Length: 224
Ligand SMILES: Nc1ncnc2c1ncn2[C@@H]1O[C@H](COP(=O)(O)OP(=O)(O)OP(=O)(O)O)[C@@H](O)[C@H]1O
Image (cartoon, rainbow, N blue to C red; front, side):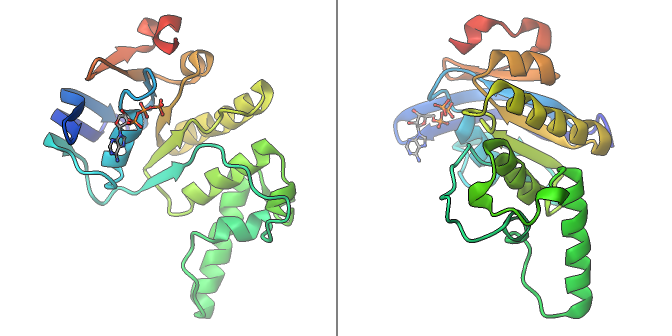
């Protein structure tokens, strides 16, 4: 439900050995928000995302979230070899469990069909992933992340290295999913324009703290 809390940090602290990443941070992320994580290199954005995804342990404090929520993750742009053997549809399907059960197979086919429609990849489904453009590859990663019907979608610099127009297309699509399906979007970014244009709010990482800020408070200086 819109406005419902999906993640809350209470006095959350993370250290790697002696190195402090962030200390006693407090923030909330609501259902259906489109929020950016911004701040300098090494300030802890990826570390926070890993804690949210259960891949890294917190050192202290609390991170409250409903464990039944699924999280989809779109990684940083990775290029794919030109001779990569799978087409886009088969690549997206990799995230579904293989089954011989005919009923389950039919269900899976329907899920794949819907995801390809949602991400506007239907007409490209038979294109080898290695021959797809950067934006098409990124949409295939997005489709894969959406397969398990996540409540939270994390985009990790997914638009870096794409040209401006393609970046906007991908972000328009994510915005549409956010608005239409109330998907909570967490966007790790170093891009000021995209943050201003698409996100409702930001968490600003600096000096071992994480500060929630409104979109009006986001300034170019935060991206230097
Ligand atoms: N597994 C680890 N062991 C030790 N130190 C780590 C580990 N993972 C990250 N760090 C350190 O924690 C700090 C935060 O790293 P993190 O990757 O979260 O930063 P970031 O804000 O995502 O940076 P960037 O914008 O460059 O991607 C860095 O100093 C990093 O070197």
